[in-house]
Length: 292
Image 1 (cartoon, rainbow, N blue to C red):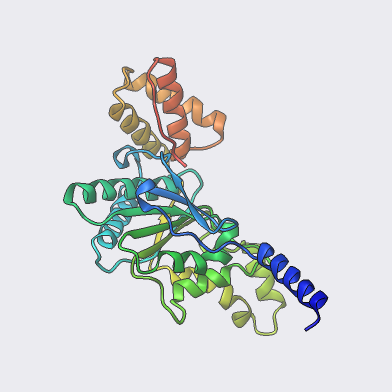
Image 2: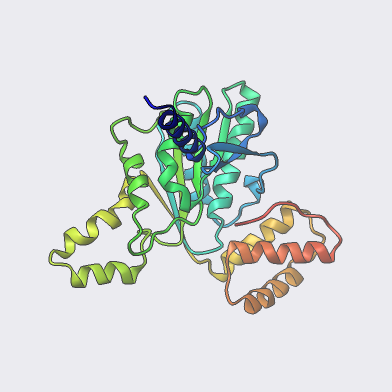
């Protein structure tokens, strides 16, 4: 072969190698309890301090709390568990509950000497790389809960197919050491006008929307979060105040909560927590953590 041609091919091969994404690096799972999936770098970035509340502080969603905590605990123990979708009203603590349940179960595991239990967050825009992440986690001794917060899809968005394939199992199947949790404000993950438009314009309306709305059916658990009424709102703020030992009378606490909710245009767990933070600040008491 001509030397110049060989040199050209060598330079082309080198350029292609530089353009290729780096291979996924084996994560150091001892670095943290939580990680962020960074697909551009093909790695799990450790999160030393996860922003979360103790599960006892999450108020007004006792039934939902019991379901997700028990499902998470079973999975961490190596027992059968379901992928879960937490859907419903904004600000009712869906993602906070996932993070708090992970913290509670991980603490139990540390006390019992069980294998490490990790939380990994994957952004909705990175779902197309989910199979690669699963291959990175497959076969490891640790168990992983994958959290995708605020999951939804728009028209012409095909990323849901990657998630659907994972939830269905695909040819390889979902790794036994991985569980998928998603939160969404939409029950079917698609905007209602998009579903209605598909139904109105398609030759076969049922088949046109089935593939998209059926994604929700792939989750074994559907856990609904609904707007709270005033008694529930009061129960939330009083529960927070009691847990944080805030020195304030119930009547004054409730009066301030009503005014706060009016200025915020509604009642939710997030609004209750924001109000409690304001009260604690006015009393000179430090509060850490966030209710998402």
